[in-house]
Length: 271
Image (cartoon, rainbow, N blue to C red):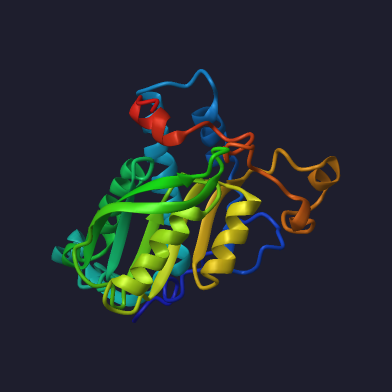
């Protein structure tokens, strides 16, 4: 007899209420928010910085995989099969025969992408998983405002047909770099993407506006929304309720309260 207990395993993402639309997931998790607060604290330095980033991304990727990746039914003999024919796990598992690509947007995305790539290799067939690399830089105007992004180089290991393409980028500030990267994958890389998934530690209302406008099909999973430079009336409303008044970026396009330039902090290279 087959035990039906694990035939349909329920999973419900813990989310904050917002008005940004169904493609945006603001994760509500006190443990992860506590770790993220520690990561962004002024006194936190290496090696604790990268330890926290690894933990946060392992959890964030796990949530996105549970929410979005397909499953299948499995019958897997356990070590007890030597003693009884009932030593078999029967139930849902994540389907390992799925293509997935983790995109490293250097430099802040390098460690998060490696964590994502390694985790995907543990649950999917490794031959179906790869990691790509993109070098990007911000375009600034005379007043040092971000006006766009340039791709300086890339190493892309093949097509994207039928693949989940994940973009682990810690700070979703303006959305300029990520939007450019997604556009390149859609227009320049052969094949049709199955799903685009953005994985961010912190995002701003400006970032959400850019990504949902440029790529309405892209899914966003974020641990925290920062809108610290908004007028007072915004802070008693749900995110997106007064979207036109929300502001999370200072004049240099850094996130407030944020955590500073995460690429700089993670690499101890303040240039």
